[in-house]
Amino acid sequence: MDIPQPDMPGSSSRVEYHPGNNTFKLSLPKLFNYEEILYYLNRSKLECLHQVDQGRIYKLIKVKETVLLLQLEYDQETHALVVHSLLEAPLRAEECQAAAAYITEWLDLDRDLTPVETLVASDPILSKFSESLRGLRIVGVPDLFEALCWAVLGQQINLTFAYTLKRRLTETYGEQHPFGERTYYLFPTPQSVLTASVQELKELQITTKKCEYILDLARRIDSGELQKGDLLASGFQEAEQTLISIRGIGRWTAHYVLMRCLRDPAAFPIGDAGLHAALKRQLGLSMKPAPDQIRELFKPWAGYEAYAVFYLWRTLTL
Image (cartoon, rainbow, N blue to C red):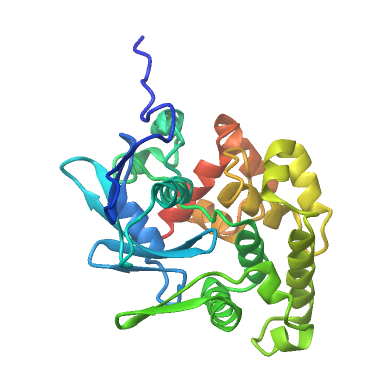
């Protein structure tokens, strides 16, 4: 039997950079679907933390105290991302490496998708999407505070209103940098959010409880009590328990953060409404599937549940 070969290099050292330049190339794993990246990033006109225009992605990031405005474009001929800093100062080597590391994590470039593609091809629900969604990767939220806030804001409301709340929070407490005819934003830091009171956050139409949760998360991260590195080092089960022990974070929120920020492929937000809707649609059910039925369907995906969920989310718009 032929053994599938990994679709990516063994490390993230894929950067082609020339000192004194404002551009570098980031080579991509074989299984990479840029069109799907664009689709996901462009799914809401209310998104304020990146922009997509004519096949290019624009993203503001911060490397230590330096703000970088990046333009990402896919080069089909070399199967690489061409990353250009739009600010005048040439990229320093450390800034280039930090930007490449951010993009690698954001776009899930270090994941070997070979096992995922094998599972998709044999899945009774997803196999019909194996070609159209080939190379689909989980777009992440690298910053822990942003991921937690986004998950909390999204609890029990529709996606459009969640984006509205995130935009209000970002525009009020995040850094903003005008460039040309556009303004680009950085998500608020815990320190900037801690300058607000519950009442001030409520003025953004965030519920009282969610305001309290967000301020508590900001305090925990600002004090060092809650850190991404510690969660990653602790392993899946301990990280899950640490998150669930925090007021306002239930199993869905914890697994959403495990999936999008901590990058655990076994994260499984089984209570997710979008997952239920996708399964209901694909299985032709009259009501959402029961948890036991979902667990049974996901048994072949053990260790890669997050990718099954992400694929199923995508089927809602196909």
